[in-house]
Image (cartoon, rainbow, N blue to C red; front, side, top):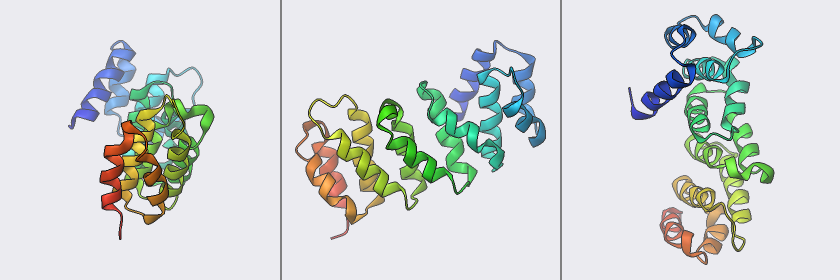
Length: 189
């Protein structure tokens, strides 16, 4: 099991307080029971996260809405696990949802994982969303440098020449300049 999955497992086991439900959901092979957890009233957030994560890894699109909600959660570990599962889900709506979250100025504090997910997906929505998000971060004293840096690095990975103007602008920002140079070097000539 890789480190991300191990951290998720340990975090959710702690949140559950060692509940028998956690052990059953973590080992449950029946997608129907996992999907029921997503819609049954009164289920704790950790139970919904376990179910959505497991369904997402299995490619079961019933997890999509729950995973998108978790991707937009205020708790970074929940966002990270949702992004991991969404990247493996294979739902065609994922890129559009991630782009909407990444470009939502009211939720920019939680945009880091949607930005990273867009890079991993390499979808048609990825480059335009990263350009919009980065352009907004290039204002003086913007507090979301981690989001800006993820956009710069992601645009370099995606290697799309449409990013050149915004990456050129990022050169003027000391916190982004080095990453912008590397990203620009990866763009086609």
